[in-house]
Length: 65
Image (cartoon, rainbow, N blue to C red; front, top):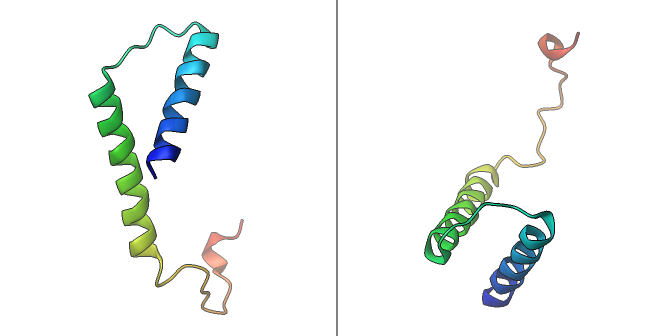
């Protein structure tokens, strides 16, 4: 997990340096934002898991044009 996070930070730093970006954020703030995004993804996966890839076997006619 820490290796993936470290690799992401390195890639983000390289991309920012190549693009001439003016954006700067303190490292603790960046880590907090990345951890929050990761937590949001995991919460979404856990709530959606019971219904993921299951259909009712009917077509929703109201969604058709």
